[in-house]
Length: 498
Image (cartoon, rainbow, N blue to C red):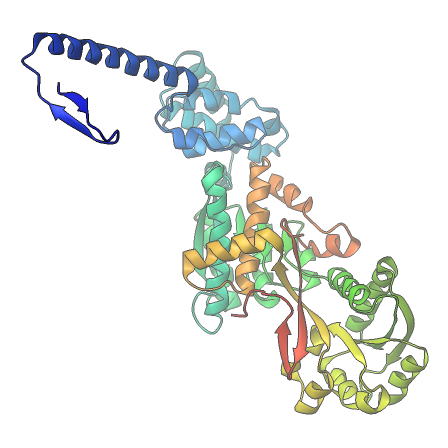
């Protein structure tokens, strides 16, 4: 071992070979032994301070649902051949959550667990227990679908969405947002979830056929789809026949809920839009009164009925309400009446045709009026004169935009994964994925338990419960626009339209 001699510069050392000198050799051996002992002591200290990572530690470090039954099933689904699988199976079949399932699902879960445990090499008392379960239940007249669904659990999620054709852009960006939510779950939680994609081609008949394949052949218990209400109805009917859960990302028909109690929608109802509009009125026109111009259609009357209590809650005074016929052509008297009641802002709750007429008559009936409304004010459906008259108007659209840190994180990860900004359908895909994964993470074993978990995520209102409208699990609000130079401009940096 070479010895060193320090030179004049303390940072430099000159090496001098003295290996043939007995004294230096002995000192070198002593230093080697001391270094070895010091290294051994350091390693022992690390071994005491840090836990040893066993093989498969990635799985061991994952989080499991708080429910014992859900944890055991997650372990069996992720590691069916593990040495501990027989013990997990023997514990799973006697969990109280299994006893509370309906008879068919209860028998299917126990048969599946017993088969997995025996296939993993159960011995002794565990083998005897699992064989007794099979002997007592395998003669039950069970549908093979129940056994397939028990074996799949909730880890295989069917998706029926247009991936080709006219609406392929909507479907593809939706799936990209959905995948981000699934990847987020799979990084931290067990069991791992997988998406089974089927292209509906935008055809309700094709979509219904694909849904039946997923339910019958793959044994899935959850289907996500479709984009439109007309295409969602056949999926809802097919899923409810076998007791599966259906989540539609963008259907808006309230009649879908009557097809079954496990049909859910990511739907912005009138109550949510009214709250967003009333908050904007309170902020943009504080201590001011507003006037409501409402068409006598059922849809617009429902919007007004939701807005009035929201304005009261937000502290916005309503100076008056004028109801006009759907086929009206002269709105100047109604607009002037609201102005005479000392309203400081005008809220238009009318169809697009009446919005265009009102806009054209505003310069004479109420010059420089501050106008607010909902997505019927979208300038894309108005003529040039109406767009010019509505310059500066604010309206809210029935699309979600995330806010704060969740929005920044989602946008960053989305751009990194796909090389493009997220779209509105991407946001819907992510929000739907969060709803499903959170329901699974909270201990759902099958479709009936996931249905109850999703019910806990509904808006706490009569409208939310009637439509089964899912509430976003991250901060999100309706998208806000301002009309500038005849175009709809997003108030903040929101996702782009597909």
